[in-house]
Length: 215
Ligand code: PRP
Image 1: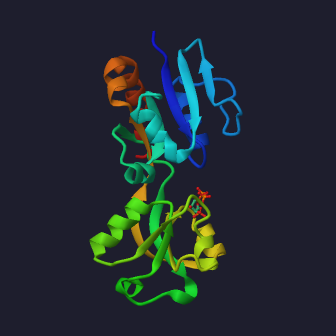
Image 2: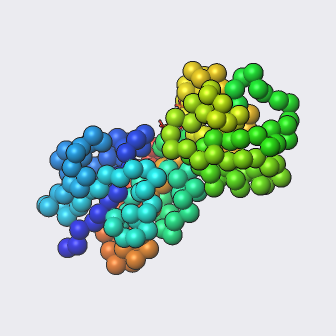
Image 3: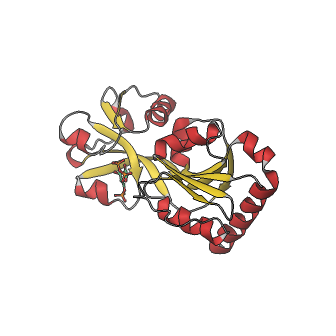
């Protein structure tokens, strides 16, 4: 039997993803987010876990370095990699939104034209503003986006909000919601054909759990 390689993203989706996969028989000892070991193999059940940075996960799956992976729809929309999206796992719900410092709130979205927008999601932000016909300057950052308006790097941010705590703590207010995202199971296109029986069973088993938990 071939190994199935599963990519797991560091961060907010990690724990839930490990638990979910264990429930359908895919587990290994010491799969933890802070593991120094980035490849963890379970020889008995022929499964290998790789732990990647969130933004890189679709790339590992696209190139077949991992057969499948779990990743947020937000990352899929931003990265636009050529992978199969097999299943909405329904957890990790968050929103991509446009936010401004409280004191900079304006009545209309068009009032934000020609301002600077800091974001980890430049592609999503660009197409959002393009759709509105509003011209902005997009500044790509890799994290701690809320810092940008505090220090004058940008006037606006486009970022993920989950609980809303980060926005509140940094005195930012949401002015528009761009989309909602949840965790998705993705697969490499070739792997899905070559390892169809095992992967299809995995999808079926996961779907049963997701449906049971989301009725
Ligand atoms: C995300 C996002 C916000 C925060 C939102 O950042 O960019 O900063 O979570 O969550 P909340 O609404 O529950 O407060 P992440 O933790 O991924 O870290 P990063 O900004 O360093 O990428």
